[in-house]
Structures are given as C-alpha cells and as structure tokens.
Amino acid sequence: MALFSGLSKYTNTGLLILRIGLGFMMIMHGYPKLMGGVEKWTAIGGSMKNLGIHDFPHFWGFMAAFAETIGGLLFLVGFLFRPATFLLLFTMIVAAIMHLSNGDGLMGSSHPIENAIVFLAMFIIGPGRYSIDKR
Image 1 (tube, rainbow, N blue to C red):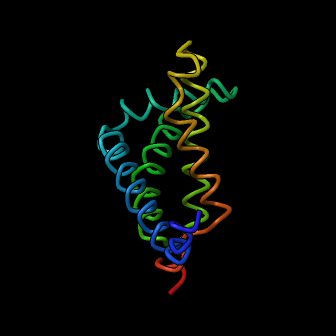
Image 2 (cartoon, helix red, strand yellow; image 1 turned 60 degrees about the vertical axis):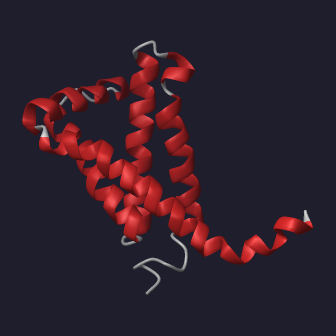
C-alpha cells in the first residue's frame, strides 16, 4: 500500500523499538528470579527435567534468570546480540516445554512460544544499525 511504503526507511528504528521494549520486559521478568537466590533457582531449574536433565537444577535456574535479566539488557542495547538472543531463545523454548508438560496447553504456553519466535527472528535479522554491536 503506497500510504505506508515510506515506513521501510525506518526499519532500524523499528528494530530499536522492538529491542528496547522486549529487552526491558525480559529484564523485569528475570530480575526477581535472579534476586530470588538458590531456592528460586532450584525451582526454576527443575524445568530442565523435561529435557532429561536432572542434575544441578540450581545452576540451570540461575542460567535462566541470568539469560532473562542480563540477556535482556544485552538484547536491549544490542551488545553481544546474537549470543544473548540465542540464550533468550533457548530459555523461552524450555519455558514453553515446561508449560506444555504441566498441562497448560497451547494457550498457557503462548507467551514463551511468542517470545521464542521473536528471538529466533531477531537472531536471524540482527540488532539493526542503532546498537552497540554496529558501532
């Protein structure tokens, strides 16, 4: 549609808005988990049993909290973008599997599935011009 055709020149601005919005929300989602300590990490890391991994749930829980909080920050600013995005993607896949294993169904697991789709797309696209990686 000709009315919106000029917006394509703002692709990098759109990527920046996406990174800021989703990165901020991941930080807000992960920070309480990161500050929750070993007990919280162990509970979160227990989700790895759905992948057949039963050892070190506190480590896996810490890594999930770290990925959401620090990975969210790196995603937001566009620094070490692809490694951070990969960690976020993996975390969302594990979260989706956990929700599905708990019987939450597709709608109950839709949030991590949607985030995983966005992180996969962003992993492929990259952070855009307005990022630390592009400086």
